[in-house]
Image (cartoon, rainbow, N blue to C red):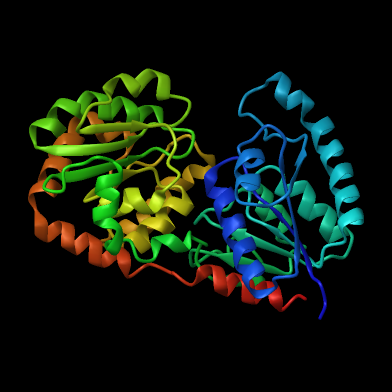
Length: 361
């Protein structure tokens, strides 16, 4: 039996890292003897998260372009050249059968180097609006696995496969974990639980909103799991109390989803895919500070299917408390949102992506 080798690259945020790990885990199930190597950006969170998941990772000296003129931007050509050289060296030494990119700075030079070396490449595009790196890489990629329809505007139509986004398999059956999750967080099983997700790094505007609304939540007998992000934890940990659990990062996503009755979340692609599987009522507050405003587009795709509520940051001061209170009091609306968002779930996405990778072996 051939011993296959795979390189995976994705990082910068959990939204790029966890899909790459999910794909690696599924490949490992199907090819127990395979060798795996991850490639990330040197000082980004993948350098910790990937080894924690049991895989080796090498770091490239790469960062994205800032939107304004900075020293970082002036260094970009040097970093890109260095990363391309290092990527070629990694590929020559490791000799992968297939290279898989899930987005993030490091996947650009790595997939470029793989394509130049004639090694098959697969892109996994999580968003409804692709970033510039994947648009450029798509010309040479063998397959492009996407989570949203109508991406022919950006990618060669014949390479596109609609797969959905890989999600953690422990989210498939969270209903059975509710009691365990409530106990784990020391919550009251008779109260409604609000889960607040700002992404792995945190979301300043959501944190400001939750701090302002805390008295309202508590007066409505709501308890909160508030993931404020590691950048903001020092500012908000003072709000920890029996009914408010402030955390910087969540390791057991299955537990927080199981405990939640209502969720407030950013609309990064991986979060949206997870929330479809979880099937709880969601208020999306997209980040306006991302390329091409893709989070708003991700959220709108769910709202059009009547599966979630969307509030823009500019609407929070005037509308949030009215919208939240109305949702909290309306069990019928909660059930309707849950049922509709669940219809959009693609729980087998990882397996479908791995089938596409196997075609290239």
